[in-house]
Amino acid sequence: MTWRLVLADDDATLRRLLRLLFERDGRFEVVGEAEDGAEALELVADLRPDLLLLDLAMPRMDGLEVLTHLHDPSPRVVVLTGFAEPSLCEQVIGLGARACLQKGSDFASLTAQLAEIAAA
Image 1 (cartoon, rainbow, N blue to C red):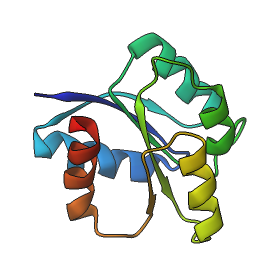
Image 2: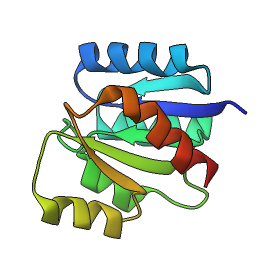
Image 3: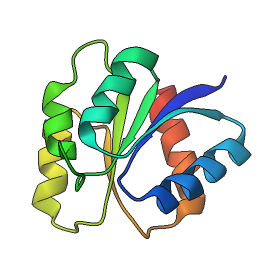
Image 4: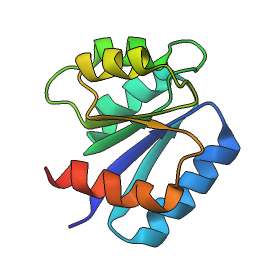
């Protein structure tokens, strides 16, 4: 099984690294990249991915706003953020995200975590 993934982060270098990570894993196909929240919503509507890896701090529309605009059927959303407040993670989970992960965490385990969420 290959899961279709959209990456949404305003950091182009991080998106490139994540694309390489997921494509090397073999279980994921990165079908789109967004540099802001509005573009992420467009890609989700057009491409219907299985997963959306979503940053919170982005221009035009932040990740929290993206979560409020997603409609069924929507992809499984995993938030990857640089913010460390536990209350923020509680908020994104309350808005429908399946997980809230910290940037800078072990990227080697990121593919395993996303595969587990995709398979659920």
